[in-house]
Image 1 (cartoon, rainbow, N blue to C red):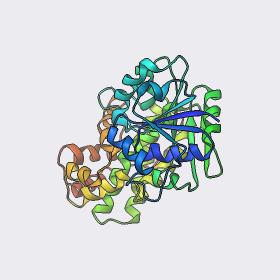
Image 2: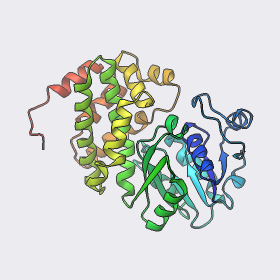
Image 3: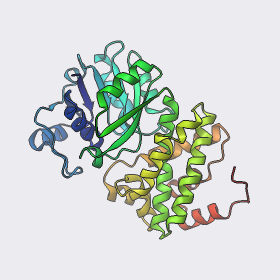
Image 4: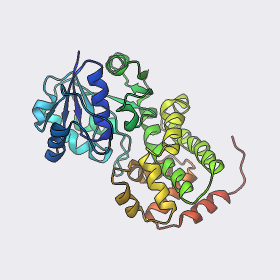
Length: 329
């Protein structure tokens, strides 16, 4: 049995708390939000995760020192836009070599850093890993079969985390390609916005298949240029996560894209989804990286124009369809 703290009381953190508790570990949930912790203490549930009731053995805290001191693993499950702030406030309590696994997906707009890079920047004394893959919280919380990848430059760390999470409903693979895993998890959210926009415009399966296929091509081009492994983008955190995020109504990014395709502004879509839409925060960073590495990413480019330049969704799709003729490979 390991002592594990979930940092963040959102849907993904709660789903993982449920899983890890079932695996026999001592689980604590920390949040900076008193209202969130009080609700979890009182109801052992979240409205956003209907049907998921947390075991009474799980504990809760608002105290930062209590949350991290003496814990075998910290699971950084706050929304990606809050990772740096959270890491900064917890850093002074974290000991040398303490293991942290980042489970959010997204890049920092200003620095272009991934989640693991942000944590390492703020908590240099820690040992950081990542966990990613096609894994909606709504299904993991109900203990439905799911497969993910844990990535660490230290193989022993990856195997340690694999053993903590893995069970009959949650299969975990290991990888040393931390950068590739994180880029796949971040970029697929932007492509999923495009898939949602297509749905919102009333387009069909042919269009979505094209977005997924050409989207993974864009992700792979950038990822390998930055040093990620090509096989990572054909695996769970590449094509696997892209498929589920583009196809499922659990996907916040797809839902936001649908609303934008139907004519709502980005802000109106975010207000209606009422949850963090990570693709919006990663879109600008993805475009900046494409320019930095001189990589063609037309879908990412058009998503940025729709989100931030008020380009009409239908015009963006027309421009994608009418680009110059090319070979597929």
